[in-house]
Length: 170
Image (cartoon, rainbow, N blue to C red; front, side, top):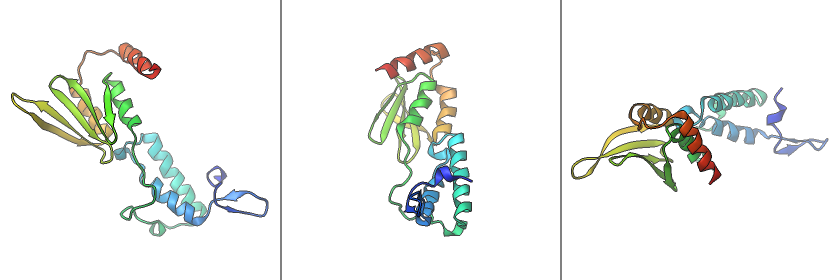
């Protein structure tokens, strides 16, 4: 059925390598952490869900047999900057990041800050004397909605594509 998934772990007499039940349980727990609100695209989340179902069916694993996410796993699912960069590229905005924190300037008085590990973002606007947080959100899709309303309109899709190509060339 889905043998492409299962080449890791114990070995049979012919020398083929197969996945062990413990490995399948670990993989299923990790696949459950992939979701849209953690930055995965819809197709990626759907693929993870289907792969989880295939592994559960193949190894006869019940949902209650899978360790919950509250206990820390050895390698938890982590977001990376690729998703956020693709989002701001849609609006031809530059993303600056160092470690787990990033920012996007929407103008001289508006900055969007991103915390990668928490999958959170917030907007700070400069008032007469200080910077104040005005909007907070969670996840890439909510930032996309905010940018649709508040991103500078001085871009065209042709210019955005050209700018993306220039950034990739660097």
